[in-house]
Image 1 (cartoon, rainbow, N blue to C red):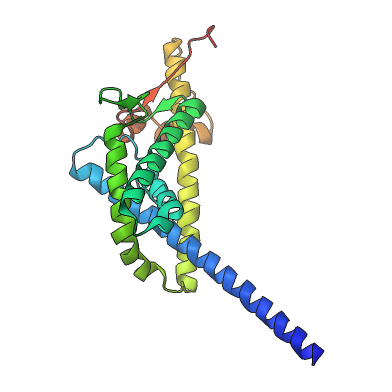
Image 2 (image 1 turned 180 degrees about the horizontal axis):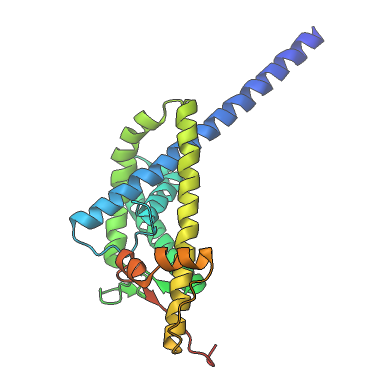
Length: 239
């Protein structure tokens, strides 16, 4: 009888562990696709409203990745407040504004790069965020969590099969590579800008890596993808 009880406990633990792993895998699948879907929506929104794409976030891919990442975090943190529209609006406005400010601060601190600037809009915070975008983010948070998420989850809650899992892995690798390429490209662009400012106009094109980066990350390509990109360069001697 004791052995039977122990076996039952063991089976229950195994079922709980298996269930937890499946849930984690499904959550990964869901949030990956939240990022992809809202990245595409963000890019389309900028295109439709004629906004200059300054927050695209990728050098090669068709995604405005910052929108997707922010939307994913927004859902993960605030979905528990579903049904409380006023609270969702306030918390969404605060959370997204904080994320937007942090991303801008990190990009400028690490790369010396500014992708957007709200300095010309009233009630802005160091040009990194402003009241207008905060209000829009609050409204969008309510729409996403109260309406859009429910519709998306009906599709994404289905148990991912092997093919979908493979697709998820491939997409994750592709996104990771593109993030690396973005940082690499902006770093190369910054170095080139600094050398030009110092009067060094010669571009080394000797190795395979140099040939690749000079072609993929040319000034023309970077400025086309990030038309409002501003690079902060500290003159030699002031560093």
